[in-house]
Image 1 (tube, rainbow over the protein chains, first blue to last red):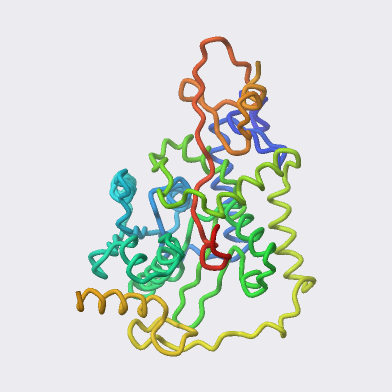
Image 2: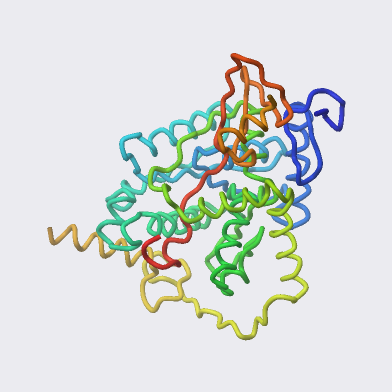
Length: 313
Length: 58
């Protein structure tokens, strides 16, 4: 297969675009397209300060790399979750993230959950009994809380995450299977800021996971190959595998699924919004972040419970 | 044989991997020779955003 731009040997083939490119032109194409999506979805401008949530994985590091290449003011935030499970998972992902930042002269904020709140994620999950024996629910809660806290406290205009098209399609698929209209109404490349909540954007949302892997490899980005040890059997991974089977026989199916959804929702073809009750939000008395619960937000309530149990032991 | 037929032989979905040989990415139509060592890099990442919203037992 030949590169469409120069006719040289292609390194990446994107069947959904009927486009094959050599390594050099691929490394140009990805940032160009990212810039196109940043503008199309009005994610942020060059005047704004961006906080990139980085995990040490291929997507978030690739995103940070691309934003730097495009000349955006982008600092990183790494959350130390304290997950070991015999492979030193968090330790290794932090090492790779710090190495990445140091090599490029990028500013990285590090938040260690155990240092901040007394326990790492797996222990918080066990003590709080949230999440059916897996720490994923507590992990998600903590990450969203901490990302927002740091963006707000450090004065960033926008929070960027490395979610790719496969992530978006899998979430869309799951929410469609259960017709979770509240989530279906919100999902998209941009979550606007609201009282106490930073704007959240996904600049890579139109790139396939395979393309971001290719980008990271082509750029020589050293990322953590291992998956989170708790991810085994995760539903989102199962959905991604199903969608990849579909994509194999119908190239472009994943992209079409996501893009046509966004278009149909924008046209008003999908939901009758007035039937969806909006949650009334108020500020959590402890951390100040918006919450729909009556008193403390879910995160602070969980931390309170954990700290009370620790005190009584 | 091509990379594609090799992947099909071991029941690996091409969409879920990136293949490299001697450190370079290769495509589905690449001809593989006897003795070639091909590295398959898993593409799928992530974890469960659905745990709390789904029924127990999954």
